[in-house]
Image 1: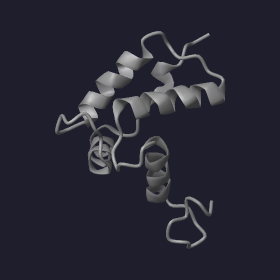
Image 2: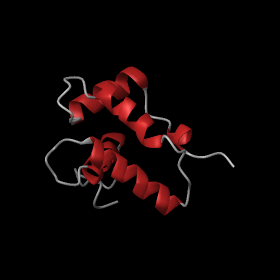
Image 3: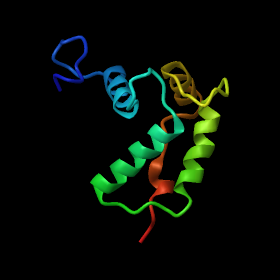
Image 4: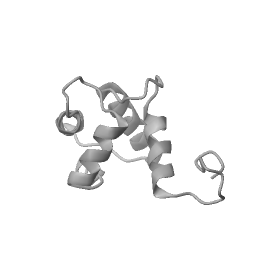
Length: 100
């Protein structure tokens, strides 16, 4: 909680969680996500949660990434991500997980 609680008010607000997730995925700390960082993060989370991803999960992620990358520079900034969430809602990753 202390790591995520940016304003040190003892509470974790949604914007603080969003920022913490953004920073966790931004492996090179350049202030933007590359497609590689996103696929690495999803692959890591799948392994940690012991779930198997569908065979074409990377193609699905690439398609969604392209939609979020509003200016087409192959990077997703916090502003682009926020705009995409406002327009489409939070992503549903269940389509990436194999159903057994």
